[in-house]
Every structure is written in C-alpha cells, then in structure tokens.
Amino acid sequence: MQYRRLGNSGLQLSELSLGSWVTYHNQVDIAAAREMMALAFDAGVNFFDNAEVYALGQSEVIMGQALKALKWPRLNYVVSTKFFWGLDREGQTVNRKDTLNRKYLMHAIDGSLTRMGLDFIDLVYCHRPDPHTPIEETVWAMSDMISRGKALYWGTSEWSADEIRSAWNIAERHHLHKPVMEQPQYHLFYRKRVEQEYKRLYEDTGLGLTTWSPLASGLLTGKYRAGVPAGSRGALEGMGFLVKGLTDSAKNAAVTELEAIATELGCMLSQLAIAWVARNPRVSSVITGASSVAQLQSNLEAVKVIAQLTPEVLKRIDGITLPLAN
Image 1 (tube, rainbow, N blue to C red):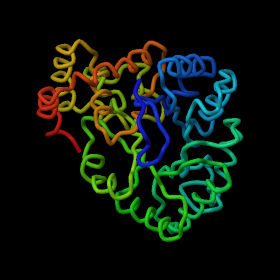
Image 2: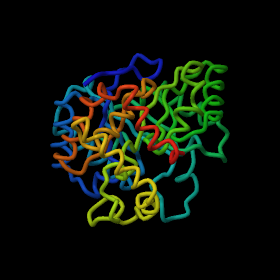
Image 3: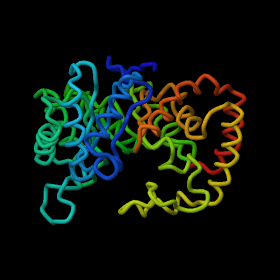
C-alpha cells in the first residue's frame, strides 16, 4: 500500500481506503465491520470514511464500536464524516437537515463525536452545497470547528469548482482554516468533474481528492449485465434510484469489453476499475466499499494492478468508456 498527501496538506492517506456507505448497518454489523477494518488496516489502509446520514447515524455507531474494540493508537488511523442531510429525514424540523448553517453544523459535529466515541474527527466534509446559507457562514463555522479541536481538516463533497474556489477565497481573506479536500464521484463512466472542472483548483488551491464509487455502484463489477441480482446494492431498499444506471445496456456492453482487458492483465474487472481511479495522481485516496471479507480482499488487490495500466492499456480503456462518460 502506498500513501499520498491529502492535497497540499501534510496528512498522508493510504491510496485505497474503506468506506461505510450502504454497507454498515444495512449489510455489515459491528462484528463484520471490526473484522473488515482489521483486514484493511493490516493491508496498510489508514483511512476510514463515514457520514452522519449513513444509516441515519448507525453507520457511525458501528464504526465507533469497531474502533473501540480494535484499540488502535489514535495517531495510526484517519476517520471522516460528512454533514448536510441531517438525521431528521421524516420530520419537518427546521435547521436539522439539508443545510450547512452554523447552528446545524455545531450540533452535527457533537453528535458524530458522540456516536463514534472520538475526541475529534480527522476529516469533516460539507456533504453537498447549501444554496440557502451564505458560503461565508459555512466557512466560518467549519473553521471554528477546527479551531475548537473537534476536527482537523475540512472540505467539501460534490461542490462545483466555483463553490470550492469561493469558500477557499473567503477563508484566505479572513485568515481562516481553508477547505483542503473534495470528495467527488469518480469512475470510468464519470470523469469530467475530476479531470476537467477541478483542473485549475489542484494548482491554485492545493485541492486533494478522496473519491467515491470507483465501481459505479457495482456496474463495473459486471454483475448487472443480466439485470439486478438479489442481494446486490441495486436491490436494497432505498437504492432504486441506482437501477437505471446499473442496467444501462450501452454501459454494460462496455463492461464486457473492459472485462476482456482485465482478463489479459490477469485481474478482475473490479480491480481494473479501482486501479484506474488510483492511477490518477490527483486522487489522494480511492474510497472502496465491501459487504464481505472476500470482497474487501479482492478490492485491496487492485493496488497490484496500477503499474500494469500502461499508456497503451489506458488508451484502450478510454476508447471503450470515454464515449459513454459524463
């Protein structure tokens, strides 16, 4: 496992990391989480990603309980969470969901710290932009969160380049803690934001990336070519919004072509897809997910494939996927 700096910060993250979206609480209990986190850690993974909204807080509880049981030195691992959606998904209480106002953020960080049983969280993200709260208010709140020792670094997730630059400029002007990372979706069929929209930010602001969905929610495993199999992510309750993309006939035809390349390289299609994301030097860490030890072991083997992605192989991959990429 190699380690990369998070943008221009001094923090180093493992090139592959382990996330909890969809899996924790829904498919993975505390015992399984502990086992998989231990396996990942032994393989060199030092970054574990979470979010307040995952399983409405239960994902943070499970990860916190696993960390307590594992008893790792706090300096040896990095944990993240994300704020915006809130936990009040059914009610109509204001200032508790879909916001980045100061009141919500101050309560949100305390809730995450309690659920995870930690004194501070290493990386905290604004999970989506909030068009109703001035960016200046959000920047001050996030900077104060760090100044109070409740978080070490802050960043954004799925913000536009203009929104990120605006936040960075506000922090620069007021001598506040700047956003240092973004967590965007990035995979073979979703490229433009990372490769084009953010291009100037890497040099101008030192932006680091912790990318999510390297397998396009499972599309790049090949499992959806014959429909949505039982027990898969697309079949889970609340994941119906993924089905259209997962069963796209053109993309699944491309997946078959990609599988042939993976076979030539002596790896699995999923490993090829993860390695493709990791080969981008702008990516600080590729967040992977797993619902079983076997799946996690397979994903971690992707680090061995990165060196096989020669310019010739990458050109062939682009020929298959670029016409279908967003």
